[in-house]
Length: 244
Image 1 (cartoon, one colour):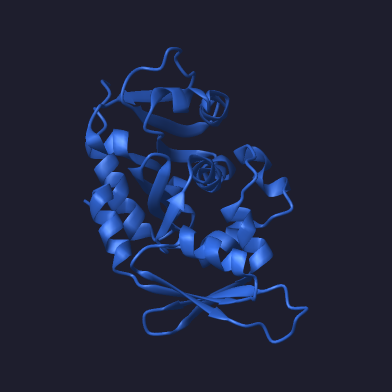
Image 2 (cartoon, one colour):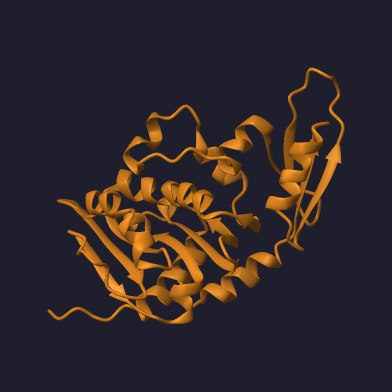
């Protein structure tokens, strides 16, 4: 069983290098801010032509190529538009490839808005699969209440079990959503969304982020089935058993 704090430490040990092929200094500064953590190196490479809009290459600690993506596409995560989970597939941006590209890469200086947009990728997988278990934590009850329509629709008339963790009971119940009240440091400090894949390893996914400064987060997302299973075990240990 892996706690959220342990999971962050594990990802911190997976060193990455982002090679930014661009001469846009503002973009470079923003990337350095978003990935300003000790396990991510940002290296600038000048583009081959002035007309080149720029792109980013990700490499691991052995310099093996992990993927590449255009800077314009990367903006979909750094400056996101937020859509309901059931509209994700209708947007112009194909975020699935982008999330694969940055999987298990530690980010920093993420805002709550960016985390909400990232959570949508997890939620949209749960919506498409339509069954399984989705766990979420937004740190505060009022933050969950702003997402009440989304989570009630996720949990309505479907085989999808939706559980939300908050420090105290929301002012209004959420239909179809199991509310777990827990005032522990884990719930108040971490934002998370974890989906068990509905019985399919390929659909398992998780987002974990720690608030280290007000409205500033360090975290990661992963599609590793074993990693997700460990996080699910941790959440299930925090979930009281329901009476038969």
